[in-house]
Image (tube, rainbow, N blue to C red; front, side, top):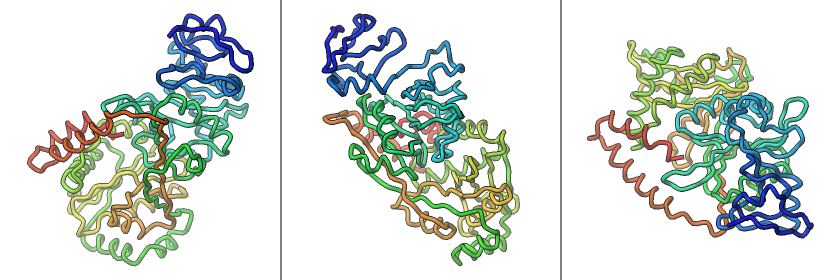
Length: 430
């Protein structure tokens, strides 16, 4: 519809700059979208409805959204130091913002620049942020990283795609509500995975839809103390692996990542009937982490032949046990890989081994991690869904994807075909 000039309860009128923007709006004093600036109160009535009265005035006071001017990428022009909220469509080329996020105590591998940009490059996602202004010390008051996706499964917002968890980087209720409001205003379902931040879980607009287990190992202890803390089964398996001639070799070479990937694809297909991630994802992780000595591939070999492998990533004093695959489990190579990973983390002065997420319906995986872990917590998957929102594509496509996955992971399907399909389709599973 065409812009009119309504007034809200506070008596504010739409500025002249808005009158030709072609949107239905409520009163606001900000320039229109055609001028590269838009506000939360500039919403399509068909999608989001109108906002008026004191709430409109509140939005005008607190919120300003500025799509990043492509001509100014790398110059951090979209970042505010005045405390207002900024939403940037493109984080790439915004080093000041990444540095501000890196300082937050809830920051992890999954909200780091290296991980986030590797995911974005692989799947063609645009990483955005709802962020409160950077202070004079270079730190942000808070931030929520997210992707707005539109594909076969419909439109949705995912905070931390393909991540075990990605906590909103906020420390108080007020900041949480300020930063999540622009996301909610977009009018799409929102998915969060939270490990350390409890604020979203107490927000009644978000519903817990599932949970997973998380395990960690305290590395800030003497090696002997860590060894003694393992369950007896773990120590026995490590000794058995050594007696069986299993040797562990550490590498950062791309060719050894290929070795891991072939095992990874085989395990996902034969054991779990799942499509594999594209190798491009692992290449991008290698490019992001290996150059800084933050990616380590541990290969368990018998007589020089690989039988298992794990990929560890390092971030902010934590060693992440991110990927594992094994062809031979009777020799217990995975237990030995964990132990050698712990020893590497200790030598590097790291404080924690993060085992990542484990589905609660995988008792074998839970038992394996519990043999080593010193702490177990829960990762909560939370979802917001706009009132009355209905997108029939999601349920229909999910059923189709499930069927495709089942048939394309059949043993009769050649592995290169399964891998090629995974490369094409994996992005829509987010």
